Image (tube, rainbow over all chains, first blue to last red; front, side):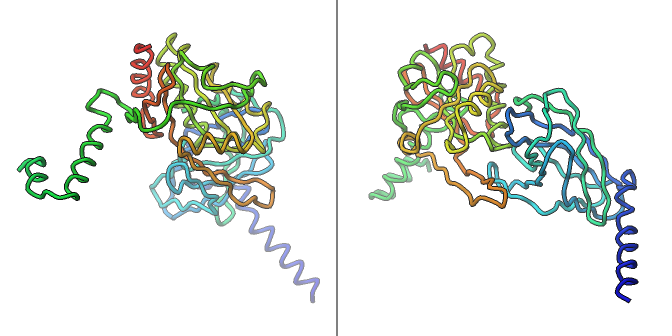
Length: 144
Length: 205
């Protein structure tokens, strides 16, 4: 009985995980994806504009990349005051901006050397299991 | 009725205080003297500090920067967004100045000396241009300087990874070539406006 339940749960988990593979089906458009390079092992910031091109609200719940050990969503409270954010709601037809001095991805613990000019893949994760792999261009520290 | 007439009519101490405030506000407004950032001449003490230059490892003080227009900014290198955004704006203003930028120094003072080693700070400052100098001091030197310019900073609670945030003032103080405080640049000021004002201070000599 217990065995059957585990099998069932495993099958369910597998099914639930499938949409994550179907990345291109998340109805979003990401533009201006860039990273501000900083030296050493200092955390960097990732910026982009994300638009919900679908008919239903979307919720961005996180990001991951083979190039960083940890990525945290940060929301602007007021200028200069940041707070880790659990998620960002994006209404159909609307955009959320991640810009310098505002919302950003905090990219921590680089796993390899990263230089201005590089392209780094970052996967954005959405509530419900959707994911989208985005190429971020690494720009100089004086990116504006 | 003009405000003068109104003050005269009202009389009394409160009215004088109001009038004085109005004058002070008028005196501080950026527009009337042609400054595009905020004129704070005389309301803060002249530049004075003793800190360690992260590039040379040597002790530096305000006298070492006489003859330069100095931008004083407090921050920390583990700040991924606000500090680099401000420094990028300052770098953009310096680029607009072209060759005149050689008469300007940006002093980035770390409010997180525990994490900001000289090596980290040196690389960080260099990433924004040759005019940017990373300075650090012990907590007493830092305290003395931040109290002098009423700069506040505080440390957040470390998370599970030992990372912590440092909250700090976002203002940039601008001193003239004689070390007198002149302007306050805010994050909302455009680099072109800051460049305009820096150009004027350089021309004053």
